[in-house]
Image (cartoon, rainbow, N blue to C red; front, side, top):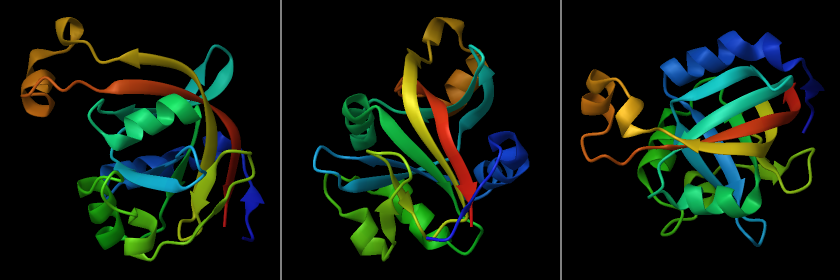
Length: 169
């Protein structure tokens, strides 16, 4: 794949537009190196502990949660558009039951970091290594947000990923 390294902060607006729109792909490899993409609509990009960090939110019930716990590395792949069907599929089906890459006709490839896969169909890529995990907590969450996003109290785990590589096509 022909892609150019970029400064991660130069892509903030593009990431935000994707998250506010159809979403982006969180890609985590299983123990055999098979990539599992999951659609995300929430993420945080910034500096924490003097490091470039991309934080992703994953519900503990999701197959991806078990994968990211073991893999410790992940990518966030941002489409340039035209992937609504794939994003909807990857956000509504489990990798436990589906080979989402194959069923969507996506092109997965090794990332630039060992243990990271990316989706070549996308335009912007972040490769990350988990440096911290925390949880959305009921006791400290605004009640309106809780009522809207957590009626079943299935609060997200939040993975802080140190950005190892960022690049675009």
